[in-house]
Length: 295
Image (cartoon, rainbow, N blue to C red; front, side, top):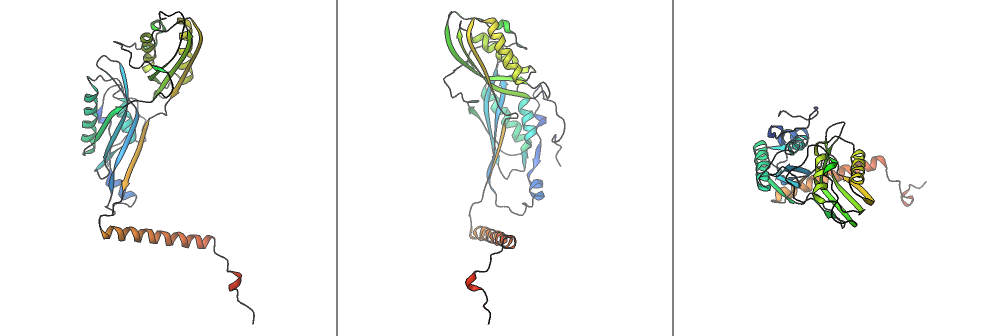
């Protein structure tokens, strides 16, 4: 049996660690469920992580949706908790390009699972469907290690109206230290806010421990203190924690007549068993026209 962290207390890794990945035996799992005798599986396992984040070469956080897939007949599949912690270990690691990150994840998974793995990091992290202006792409050459309201600076316009959003926000749960991800929406009327300083301020929450409500209230009050605003609204849309979807797909393909006969037999006996169970629980009453008449 492969060693696993499942069921154990696990600290959030602060540094890159591929040894966290725990491969699980697919055959052992099938034996437990009685599926080992059926060999005609065709399909792939699809994994989607909505909380894949790393640092670019300047040390600025980046986010993407990560899609992973591999053959459903691979010798191993990855344990979900270990994958989540492995991805967390990438959060503070710098990469020269998105391709170098993709190649690293692909190599680490293929070494752990002993199979070819497809990795896709080309999708946007989370869509902003309203009319907000995203500040995610504003250039920064550094971020602070803690939220410092002094970096928030008023802009040149004495009065304007804006709806800004940032989908790179991360904070840590003060109870479990688990990372929480959110899109921050800021709507205001009044003196303009410099986008560079605002993004630098929001990204500094990356390793800050605070409840969701506390983070939003702190952002709200810091903006009011630093800028002359007549109206202000701050909203945080937090993702579900963990952020990984697992969607295995298994297909039965009618390759031969034997496969078709097998499927027919399985479905026939299943249907017969269902009818017998229904007849026992709710037997049909004898129609009046067929009742036995007295002599």
